[in-house]
Amino acid sequence: IQEKMSGTWIPGDLGMDTKLVHAGVSPDPATGAILTPIVQATTFVQESIDQYMAKGYSYTRTTNPTVHVLEEKVAALENAAGACCFSTGMAATVTVMSAFLSQGDHCVLTDCSYGGTNRVARKQFMQYGIEFSFVDFRDPANVEKAVIPGKTKLIFSETPANPTLTLTDVRAISDIAQKYNILHVCDATFATPLMLKPIDLGADMSLHSTTKYFDGHNMTVGGTVASKTKEIDERLHFVQNMHGNIMTPHTAFLTLQACKTMAIRCQKQADNAQKIAEFLQAHPKVDWVKYPGLASFPQKELADKQHNNGFHGGMIACEVKGGIAAGRKLMDSAQRPWSLCENLGAVESIITCPSVMTHANMLKEDRLKVGISDGFIRISCGIEDPQDLIASLKIALDQI
Image (cartoon, rainbow, N blue to C red):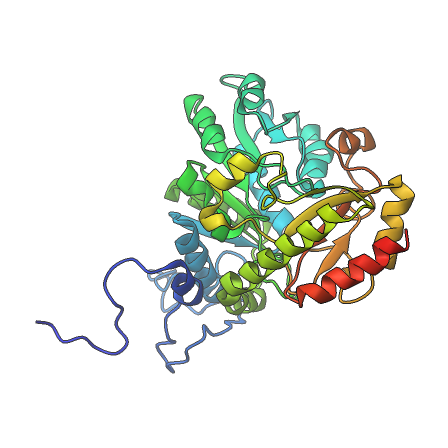
């Protein structure tokens, strides 16, 4: 019987919480440091011309040891063949579109996405002669109807959608993509790998803004795409190198540390979200509230089927009675611990006005069509005491 040694791993698959802490990471071979060092270097010395890239690195725009460790971790968390880390979430989105869409191609894109995704499709890629169909992904039949066989090269979904929390049946959309030999990328930023893993549900790529739940502390901006195959991953790295939008080593280091606590943070955020959503739903001045953990959620059956372990995340959408003015008054008057700002997924609880902040770049008619009114309220629950968060909301609502 082989003796078990310190520093070796137990046999078998590791649990998700263990992967969040340890996946991709090994003690530094030179010093034994338990944390991955920040390799803050532009270039890497080669031993000879014939041995160029023998150690895997040449120039940090192409690849970097610290960033590579985070990519290995993301791939493990997503059950992917590989992952690519970017300077921002939008850099990830632009690289996916650049890598797999050319002049004359067609993309089916959800009609409710992060505002930046909508904007870059309309303002940049359409100018290159690429066509987009903006479709309601709640019904997979809409997606299949929009496909142009032989011309559609990419299906771009987002679940839960920002900011309306509408859900996409990732398995059903992936089946459609495979039927027509189309790549399917799913933006799962709101979901995190805790809620769902798009690749396990048949998607070709899983995209995240690491700025949000991977970071969770309002420290960094970044993005990542995990890929089902090595071929897709290599294509993304190739285009990333041309664009020069790799994540910085320091951001990768901070993200490596922050994502270790993702499960603990996100469960607390989901617990808070459930309590806050129930409070809002019962308040007479709230017109409607959407949260996948509520029995009243319009797509509750899909939420319970698709979301792992009953985890529904930390995001809430709502509107108050009295229209736009009332909604804006609530956002302007909610006291700390709430913060009125952009971003989401952090330990600090945040209230956002999408029509002015995150989705102002959408065409107004498109924004209103998917339900993002000027009084729409997006809530990102943090990890504070839920009674403090509810007390602040009650004061603000009572003033309306």
